[in-house]
Amino acid sequence: MEPALANLEVFAATLLELARGDSDLLVVTSDSRGSAKLAPFAKAAPGQIVEVGIAEQNLVGIAAGLAAAGKNVFAVSPACFLTARSLEQIKNDVCYSDRPVSVIGISAGVSYGALGTTHHSLHDFAVLRAIHNITIVAPADNFETREAIKATAKLRTPAYLRFGKKTMPHLPRPVPGFELGKASLVRHGTDISFVACGETVAPALAAADLLAADGIECRVISMHTIKPLDDAAVLQAATETRGVITVEEHSVNGGLGEACASLLLQSGIHTRFKIVGFPDDHTVTGSQPEIFRHYGIDGLGLAATAKKLLSS
Image 1: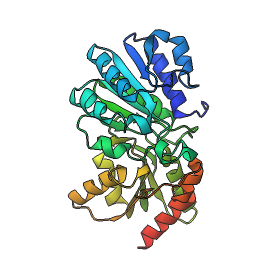
Image 2 (image 1 turned 90 degrees about the vertical axis):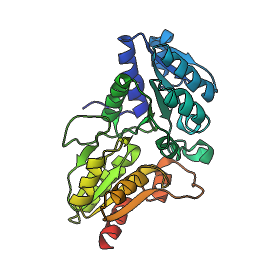
Image 3 (image 1 turned 180 degrees about the vertical axis):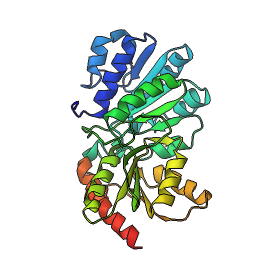
Image 4 (image 1 turned 30 degrees about the horizontal axis):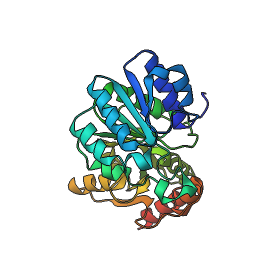
């Protein structure tokens, strides 16, 4: 089995593989060229990386301009700044202008931990879901990261990919393969469904393992593509199991949970349903695992949520 890596490491290695066969593939970054993850790319392909400094709005504008000139561009910056400070440029220069830029938000969610709310990215799904013409992806492990990069490199339309910082586990794949817009099944189950994305899929699987000891069989789905949502997977989860719990490293407002809730309600599906994420409140600080535990986004917390939902 290949070593477990941080998704950003896999992202950089996959990009380098693609760049060696495509001189038009460019990385544009803000204050990250010398980072441990991108440094190997910069060393191996110095003519295919552009460092703009701490200027995220310029980053996206330059990326859009290069894409307009025929380049295949990946714009890389911390998610908290990229999707807030550069939102206008993502909206207008990339999406409205239909430029094939893959916007890469790194150190997303609460990856920066103790640096606090200024460095947390718990808004990105919400703001980008409201913008037309962008695919939103949050890979759950190294396999999904590698395949998502390959897919978006061929997509030739705007995309946003979200990566955290921690080493990612290898997730089981009862059904092999990867396709943008189509959820990945991580575990079969008929009692209750966890629909999770990004770094919350592993805690959902941990909860399923705990619940199995009590005879509760959980379906675990990696909804790696937030937009377009895999409607069929959500509807099947809601009709084939006794409840749905969505899990995301994001505000409970405007993210994966609300996308699923809207779909179910507008489809006339009524089932037990719970959104697990970050409440509309000041977020606590600490390490990512500490913050996850505080908000019940860990195996024990999610198992307790599932039991409570099933008993309601």
